[in-house]
Image (cartoon, rainbow, N blue to C red; front, side):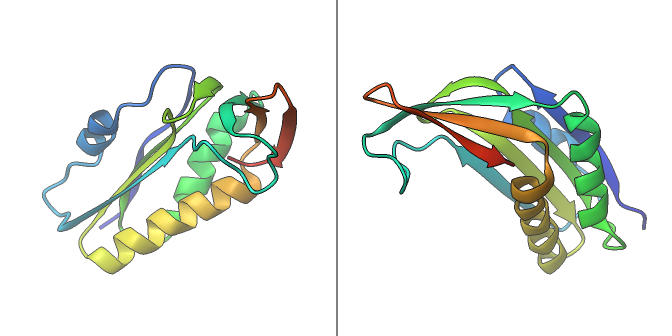
Length: 143
Protein backbone atom coordinates (compact mmCIF):
# COMPACT_ATOMS: atom_id res chain seq x y z
CA UNK A 1 0.00 0.00 0.00
CA UNK A 2 1.65 3.27 -1.02
CA UNK A 3 1.59 6.14 1.43
CA UNK A 4 0.88 9.71 0.52
CA UNK A 5 1.34 13.26 1.62
CA UNK A 6 -2.22 14.47 1.46
CA UNK A 7 -1.55 17.94 2.85
CA UNK A 8 1.67 19.92 3.27
CA UNK A 9 1.18 23.62 3.80
CA UNK A 10 2.79 26.78 5.08
CA UNK A 11 -0.05 29.05 6.17
CA UNK A 12 -0.58 32.51 7.59
CA UNK A 13 -4.05 31.37 8.70
CA UNK A 14 -4.83 29.44 11.90
CA UNK A 15 -4.28 25.70 11.50
CA UNK A 16 -7.30 23.37 11.62
CA UNK A 17 -6.68 20.00 13.28
CA UNK A 18 -9.99 18.61 11.99
CA UNK A 19 -9.03 19.40 8.39
CA UNK A 20 -5.76 17.52 8.89
CA UNK A 21 -7.60 14.53 10.37
CA UNK A 22 -10.02 14.51 7.43
CA UNK A 23 -7.14 14.67 4.94
CA UNK A 24 -5.67 11.37 6.16
CA UNK A 25 -8.93 9.54 6.74
CA UNK A 26 -8.54 6.14 5.10
CA UNK A 27 -10.19 2.74 5.54
CA UNK A 28 -6.80 1.04 5.70
CA UNK A 29 -5.63 3.12 8.67
CA UNK A 30 -5.99 1.48 12.06
CA UNK A 31 -3.87 4.11 13.79
CA UNK A 32 -3.85 7.90 13.72
CA UNK A 33 -1.31 10.00 15.59
CA UNK A 34 -1.36 13.75 16.01
CA UNK A 35 1.20 16.31 17.03
CA UNK A 36 0.16 19.86 17.79
CA UNK A 37 2.96 22.31 18.51
CA UNK A 38 1.83 25.42 20.39
CA UNK A 39 3.52 28.63 21.44
CA UNK A 40 4.49 28.39 25.11
CA UNK A 41 5.01 31.23 27.58
CA UNK A 42 8.61 30.41 28.46
CA UNK A 43 11.97 29.46 27.01
CA UNK A 44 15.19 28.46 28.78
CA UNK A 45 17.01 31.36 27.07
CA UNK A 46 14.36 33.99 27.89
CA UNK A 47 14.86 36.33 30.86
CA UNK A 48 11.15 37.25 30.94
CA UNK A 49 7.97 35.45 29.85
CA UNK A 50 7.55 34.76 26.13
CA UNK A 51 4.54 36.63 24.71
CA UNK A 52 4.77 35.73 21.02
CA UNK A 53 6.69 33.99 18.27
CA UNK A 54 7.02 35.50 14.81
CA UNK A 55 7.57 32.86 12.12
CA UNK A 56 9.04 33.63 8.70
CA UNK A 57 9.38 31.09 5.89
CA UNK A 58 11.55 30.81 2.81
CA UNK A 59 9.47 30.76 -0.43
CA UNK A 60 10.44 27.09 -0.92
CA UNK A 61 9.40 26.04 2.59
CA UNK A 62 6.16 24.38 1.49
CA UNK A 63 7.99 22.18 -1.02
CA UNK A 64 10.51 21.40 1.70
CA UNK A 65 7.74 20.43 4.10
CA UNK A 66 6.36 18.01 1.49
CA UNK A 67 9.82 16.47 1.00
CA UNK A 68 10.23 16.05 4.76
CA UNK A 69 6.88 14.24 4.97
CA UNK A 70 7.70 12.05 1.96
CA UNK A 71 11.04 11.11 3.49
CA UNK A 72 9.43 10.21 6.80
CA UNK A 73 6.78 8.06 5.12
CA UNK A 74 9.38 6.00 3.29
CA UNK A 75 7.95 2.53 2.72
CA UNK A 76 5.60 2.64 5.71
CA UNK A 77 2.42 3.20 3.69
CA UNK A 78 1.40 6.04 6.03
CA UNK A 79 -0.72 9.02 5.07
CA UNK A 80 0.37 12.46 6.25
CA UNK A 81 -1.14 15.90 6.68
CA UNK A 82 1.28 18.54 7.98
CA UNK A 83 1.21 22.31 8.21
CA UNK A 84 3.37 25.04 9.71
CA UNK A 85 2.01 28.47 10.49
CA UNK A 86 3.82 31.73 9.78
CA UNK A 87 3.28 35.25 11.07
CA UNK A 88 2.92 36.47 14.65
CA UNK A 89 1.53 33.86 17.02
CA UNK A 90 0.51 34.51 20.61
CA UNK A 91 1.00 32.13 23.52
CA UNK A 92 -1.34 29.18 23.03
CA UNK A 93 -1.58 29.55 19.25
CA UNK A 94 -0.89 26.46 17.15
CA UNK A 95 2.33 26.64 15.13
CA UNK A 96 2.54 23.09 13.74
CA UNK A 97 0.04 20.31 13.08
CA UNK A 98 1.06 16.81 12.02
CA UNK A 99 -1.42 13.99 11.53
CA UNK A 100 -0.26 10.54 10.46
CA UNK A 101 -2.53 7.61 9.62
CA UNK A 102 -1.21 4.10 9.05
CA UNK A 103 -2.21 0.49 9.39
CA UNK A 104 -0.40 0.11 12.70
CA UNK A 105 0.48 2.43 15.59
CA UNK A 106 4.23 1.86 15.51
CA UNK A 107 4.52 3.30 12.00
CA UNK A 108 2.19 6.20 12.80
CA UNK A 109 4.27 7.23 15.83
CA UNK A 110 7.56 6.72 13.98
CA UNK A 111 6.54 8.82 10.97
CA UNK A 112 5.07 11.58 13.15
CA UNK A 113 8.22 11.85 15.25
CA UNK A 114 10.48 11.80 12.19
CA UNK A 115 8.51 14.66 10.65
CA UNK A 116 8.67 16.98 13.68
CA UNK A 117 12.34 16.26 14.35
CA UNK A 118 13.23 16.98 10.71
CA UNK A 119 11.09 20.13 10.64
CA UNK A 120 13.11 21.40 13.61
CA UNK A 121 16.44 20.86 11.83
CA UNK A 122 15.75 21.20 8.09
CA UNK A 123 12.66 23.28 7.32
CA UNK A 124 13.56 26.83 6.21
CA UNK A 125 11.27 28.50 8.75
CA UNK A 126 12.73 30.91 11.28
CA UNK A 127 11.22 32.26 14.46
CA UNK A 128 11.76 35.42 16.40
CA UNK A 129 10.89 35.07 20.05
CA UNK A 130 9.28 38.11 21.70
CA UNK A 131 9.54 38.49 25.47
CA UNK A 132 7.35 40.49 27.85
CA UNK A 133 10.08 43.11 28.34
CA UNK A 134 10.31 43.72 24.58
CA UNK A 135 13.47 41.66 24.08
CA UNK A 136 13.53 39.67 20.86
CA UNK A 137 15.77 36.84 19.74
CA UNK A 138 15.99 34.90 16.48
CA UNK A 139 15.89 31.21 17.22
CA UNK A 140 17.47 29.85 14.01
CA UNK A 141 16.54 27.29 11.41
CA UNK A 142 13.49 25.16 11.98
CA UNK A 143 10.21 25.39 13.84
